[in-house]
Image (cartoon, rainbow, N blue to C red; front, top):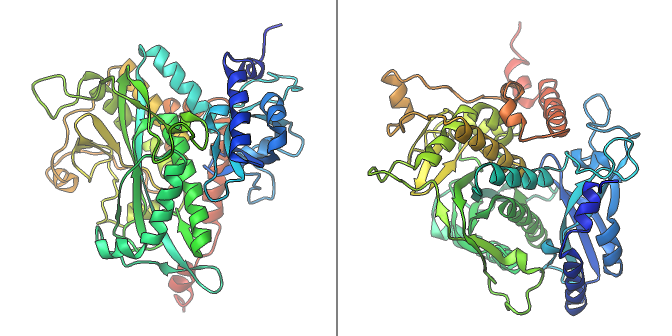
Length: 493
């Protein structure tokens, strides 16, 4: 009988040696407890904790948790569990030794990311990869993409804006910690104790921090790290969010990743800078740690460098991307409407698009250094995908971008000439440009019609995402807000 996906995974060449190396590091570092983490459909970190004494057992057998945990174990507005009912089986989570890392805020605790599988006793596809595992899906889609395109790999760097809010006596947000002055060093300085602690923890966990600044909303910071393989970068963004949540606890603040908590100031975007490469080598970035005694598996501190960047110009026009790059742009521009349902994934996300004047992209076009379009060339050799905000699930976003690029390359899609004008001026001059969806409901309709972007959510993932987000939209539509009461309470007579 052929081995299941689970059996192949736990018996993979070299895995036993990695498991033994993790045991050695657990003992050397004095780690007592382990977090087994995976990422839900909305990007929430879920999982279980186990005593470190049981590392070898969980590494070979995994842990079990209800399937519904991949959908946050939430109920819909009718009180029914979304995605999977209470009769569903339990998933099997298998930790990946190469993701082991010590938590710098409590060095007794280690962390692993896990790959999810169907239960071993399922009647259909026992032990198969669980398709509601957004992280596992991205890995498998990227592997297939590389096979289909002669080793072409997607590298990604993200720009995670977020806001540090004061916590009122009632525990609720009480405004931003700093004033909304963009690039203002004094406001940046006011948050120095906070961001220095974030950087300390980030570097301890393998994030090679490269720059940061105060953005133009209250308490809004953006801290960046070096770009890398799309999956590893998504892991780092998820880790960064976990770090910010911990630092907020230490300073009695709120680490706010909500897209638009305030109108009249900029929202929190999470631009994805992308490029397609062949070749390259892994290079260790110890990020201030002793390279001989890293606080975790060395893979946390590895970055892919070098190789050939296929987004670089290959003609006399030094601004124009190469052929592969143009085709990738063509794919992304074609699918921008459906991609918006992933990049702008909440009801609140569309406050960002409606609050005009704050550089949020609302048109399906591309250009050079043009912040009025959904996609721009931000520097030679990379594209900035802009229709994405701080609430994004980076694994779904990476997969959506990947499959759009795949469509563009396979079908040699032409994105048209780059738009160098302000898009509003171009439209006044007669240019016809499609507008992006301007509500979650509209974007979900676009996703329903787009089989390419749906392919980034294989198996059960699209069903779960559609169910979860449709319920979110319906909940909003059947809610009476303060605006409703303020606008209509005294309308008549």
